[in-house]
Image (cartoon, rainbow, N blue to C red; front, side, top):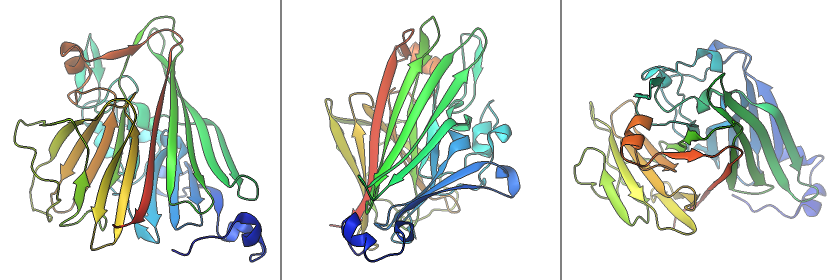
Length: 333
């Protein structure tokens, strides 16, 4: 990708900067997503990504130099009204994309915790945004910014507010996510947070390597974790989930690289609040996905299991927690 000149020099070469860098606000017209909002960000540095305000401002399709990087699930994008919050119904409107948020008070397997039925991965990814704001200022500081507020609340229950800000820059090949989660209720409330990041072909292919600098690796099924390389699609293969404990005290980088494609994806995680990463390997033909899933809780089997393991966190009344992670794409090597 050709490197962009500074904004002032670039302006001398185009009629409008939106020729190379812009934020578009759109809406779907068809299918289960009809009427829902879509935000497309074009950085001018070869990176384009889509945000879904009606699905927690999660990240959908992503391309780098015109090549798709994010994985798509069989289910097409759908509005929050179609979400199913019992059992594994989450899978019926999980469209994949670079990010699907798990939480805000439960993620992982369906469970019943203290008399409350909790569906797979919680309600976060079906929360519609309000106060959606977009800012494209390449002439000034070069910032590209999309922000919104989501709330998960019910009478006699939780009252959680998530403020999300997704940023990039003119000419950038990456983006950053900053979330601030606040307990607005007068009592403490359980809290679990998962960033379900999904990468797919052609970045993920036979020979793709995954480098996670962990202090400990454990397979969910108790088997050996296996090597760092991704294999080819396998008909009928089952999923594999690994938990990686990250080094404490700062930012850690996870790299997914494909030498043949000549591209690497680098995911930066703030381990102060996201000390674990679940690696979801799904090699089955017709699915073939790789999930890199930073989390605040070391248990993937739901809130009841986290409570039983003594690993369930909570937010005190008025307490806020900030989560930061970033993704960038670069040439291999």
